[in-house]
Image 1 (cartoon, one colour):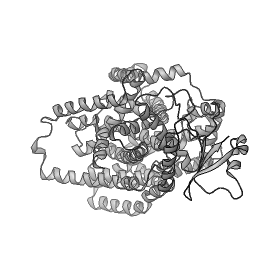
Image 2 (cartoon, rainbow, N blue to C red):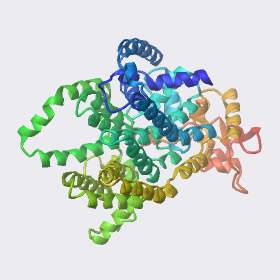
Image 3 (cartoon, rainbow, N blue to C red):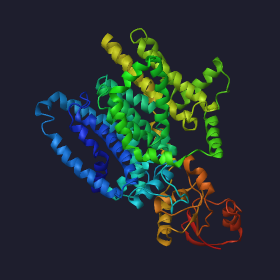
Image 4 (cartoon, rainbow, N blue to C red):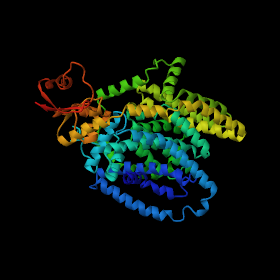
Amino acid sequence: MIVPLILTLTVLLVPGSIIIFQKKFAEELSVLEKIPLAVAVSLTYWIVGFWWLSITPVSLTIFIAATLGLTLGASVYLWRGQYPASQRNKHALLHNAAILLFIGALLTPQLYLISQQITPGGKDMSMHTYIAALIANTDGFPRTFIPILPVNDFGLYPFGFSTIIAAMTLFNTLPVYTNALILSGVAHFLFDFSLYVILRSRFPFFISAVTSVIVAWTSTNPHLFIAWGANPSVLSLTLLFFAVAIFLHNKGKYPLLIALVVYASLLTNYMFVITAIYLCIPLTLLIFPAGRRIQTLIAPYARSIIIATMTVFPFIIKILRSGWKLPDATRQYIQTLHWEETSAWTGTFSWKGLTEISGIISALTDTQLLLLFTAAGILLFRSHRKLIFFFLYITGIVYFFTINARHWWLPLSSILYPYRTSLILLIPIAWSVALLLYETRKYSRALYLTSIALMLLVFIPRLHVTQFLAEAKNNEGVSITSMKALSWLAAHTNVHDVIWNRYDDAGLWIPAVIFRPITLYHTNPVDMARLRAARHRYPSYAFRNEAPTPGVTIQEDVAVSIPEAISWKFDVVYDDGVSVIYKITR
């Protein structure tokens, strides 16, 4: 297991490790603090770079190997003289020890969860994993979902998360579902650290560490996403947060890298970058009302933005050629989801309506966190008026996004899920709390220590770590018993055999685990309509991993979705008391 672990870390650190050796990059951060940032840069590279395989004959394996070789050479060259021995003093050693303990604390719940599961929790991850399996089996950019899915096109859905899983699978030789589990843990760890590294651009280690843990682990989301599988959303949000951190630490330098990280976020999940754009447009118009001023603001970054856009040229061409538009049925399905997410709001614009919307946002984040955010804003208003107004603006935009979910006034509203867009608030919440502690420390050390103690006393019982772990474990897709059944299926079927499955058991994971097509998939809004319109395929086997309804035969169960099955013959070919596999004769 040691060798696969080393190979996994290699993929996660290459080529982002180059920034570790850049002393002038984020100078406030130590080498250890730059390591998770380097992982984010590596993920950016794999996500953006993979799209070029769609227009070149290069395989993913060759792409990985070439990257590793070039990075090794560049790292050796850049390492020379970057960190002299004079920096390795007693104070630096203590600081690094504290950082190691902090990183270990953030990693502990994710490592525990990885050790307890076979596949990630949640139905969504079955889809992200079978996309990764398709990429790995193709060893490059797939042209179609066939044979795993009866959809002829590939690439309209943002599959950055699946790309990294596939790259890890080809390099470390672990099963694709194991790499999906590992990357899920990495994404949630990086989210915690992204809040920390944003705060470290302004605040000392202890304040940044305490605040980031309290905000990240008290907020209901995004860590609860791990229970139902929206881990790519967590990674997308995290990459956007890292882009903010790079900007803050380097005072606007490295615009090309920032733009690339933003594009990687977009290629992992569309909604957070679209949310950020909508947030920035009115702010830009408000602060820079004159066209000349806007031009002055953008001009220094224009070249970097153009170059970054060129790096995602294959993606842009794919979108433009597709002419993709959500069918009405899919739009209605998403709109229903948005209505359900905002059902606590009656739809009336009043003080009561404002309270109801506040309740929705509180449920998505945390009531106590929002109260602390409000208190910090009040206490800091006199000394940091402009900053508080800026945070009020962000809060107002989040409220607007929540209201928009019921009306769809904005273009691309189908992408702006309110329970995810509200997470943009976590940056102003964390910054306000850290700033309050920082100002309190300057005013009175006794008051500062008292404030820390009170915060820990209030929020430690509210940390949702055990809840996240329990719900993820309860939503695990494949158990040890069902894995044995799937292994039997893999040995006795081929990729052309379609397996009938249920949606709520391990059968949903058949494409991801053993690369076989099924009859009922978890899919995404982009491919949903195309999957429904695909030609019907009759199954050769049936897989059932939960107790049947009393009095209902397997023929009747399958006939719910395939009426002709009522006359088929089903022979039991595997039965371990939990999982049952039938051979179908038509």
